[in-house]
Length: 220
Image 1 (tube, helix red, strand yellow):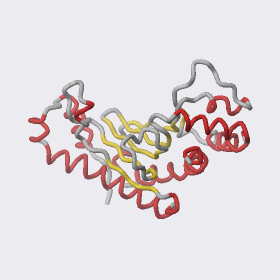
Image 2 (image 1 turned 30 degrees about the horizontal axis):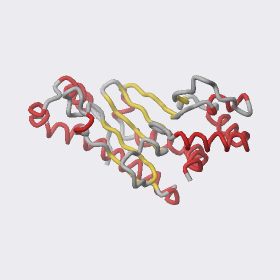
Image 3 (image 1 turned 30 degrees about the vertical axis):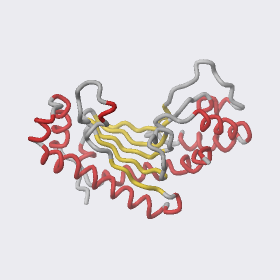
C-alpha cells in the first residue's frame, strides 16, 4: 500500500545525481529499494488498479521504469537515472513507445509531473488528427472547452514553424502541434508525502479520459 514518498526519497534522488557511480549505488542499493523504488511501485500499482477497474475495456497495461539507463544511450558516464516514472497505456509490440498515447507520472529531484500525451507523436498520427479536426472541429472544441474549466493541466508540445491553418480559431493551437501533452507540474511538498496522493493522480487521469478516448482514435 502506498503511504507516500518521504524526504528520504528526495534525498536519494539528489544523491544519485551527484554520485552517479556503480560503487555509490551498490553501497546504497537498500535505500534505493526502500525509499524510492518501493513507494513508486506501490503508487503505480494502486493508480493502475483503480483506473483499470473503471476502464477495463480500454486494454491498459502498467509499466514502471528502471533506474538503470539503456547502455546504448549513456553518453555522459552516468549509468543511473535520478528519476523514476510509471505509465498507463495500451499494449504495444514495438520497442519504441514514444509514439504511444500514454498516461504517466514522473518524479525527479526538483518535482513531479503527470498527465496524458505523446513523448513524440508519429507524423501520420498527427495528420490523422488534423483530418478528424477538419471533418468535425466541434468534437475537439468541446474538449478544449472542458480543458478550460480547470487550471491543473496545460497543453504543451512543439509546433510547426510554418503554421498549418485550422478550420476554426479555437482548434488552431492543437492543429499546429507536431506532438502534444497535457501536463501538470508539481513541486516537492506535503501532498507528495501523503497516501492521498493516489487520489490526485487517479482523479487527474479520469478527467483526461475523454481526451484519451478522442485521441486514441487517431492511432487506429
